[in-house]
Image 1 (tube, rainbow, N blue to C red):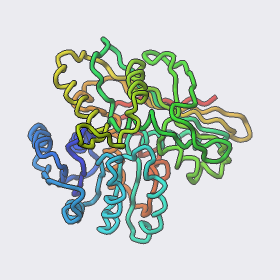
Image 2 (image 1 turned 60 degrees about the vertical axis):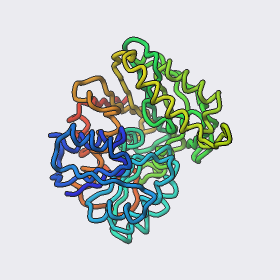
Image 3 (image 1 turned 120 degrees about the horizontal axis):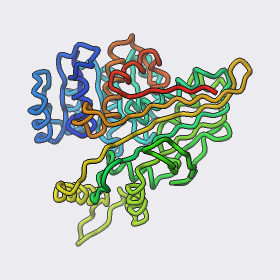
Length: 395
């Protein structure tokens, strides 16, 4: 099978490649087209992995001919180009035109509604597109499906993600993922599902404290823009069960949370609105990215070893056989040697799982969110294979 990976030299793309080439693969891969504008990063990754199945493709996504050449003939196109760069729909449409199955990592729900509106076009062309296939969104959607399957009637499902770092405090701010994504999560309004309809909620609203096991402890969660709340309450097998509430809330490590709040207070939430410096217009995001990258390089020796712990969980309330029931499904990710080469193992491994299941299972043409495409029986064993721990509680 031929896999086209756009943005393949980035943190998430590199992680996906690692997982695809591991002994966890369930499909026969003949070629991975590693496509990126950063030649040096592509070469470094290819040299490190040393796998002859990797083919490097210099790609400028603004060049439609080059983009089409990178996608054409592939068995799937995995889009890891950062969503907020604005090329999501261009790549999405290119895959449809070339009749190549498509998947992406989502991106705060920025294009979710537009993509879902193209369901009939993809269905007519016989092309599957699965959007938002990482950890959150992605695995989180599948967790919600597992909760919904335990209920005949659903009052609400509340979805949470928390990360915590264990070790000496880091004097250097190291983003957990794309800087633009983090800033958007903190600075932009979000769409949640309350009272049986979608409503807009202010940035960093919906404060809620939950007591979690160590190392998370007492965590404050907040609303954040994501795609799960745009799709899960409307999904078949969930919508008709009467769901009236669905929310997504985030908790980043305590000290890092303070840093991102401070950056938003300083005005970096408007990261795409140019400022003029010495007669030259620059985007705050470009400046911040460069400063953060430089700071990480200059102070690499000061960055302590820290263990990252994640917990992803959904709590559903409703009824089963007429009896009140609360269902909690959670996935925890604790440090393990297999995650060492990854920047964000959970996101990239889940994207690899999604791509492989799309290729291994019969096609479902159309545009789908993960909770509507994947089944629990196929998905959860792949999580366990990667040492993610799954727990179900029904009370």
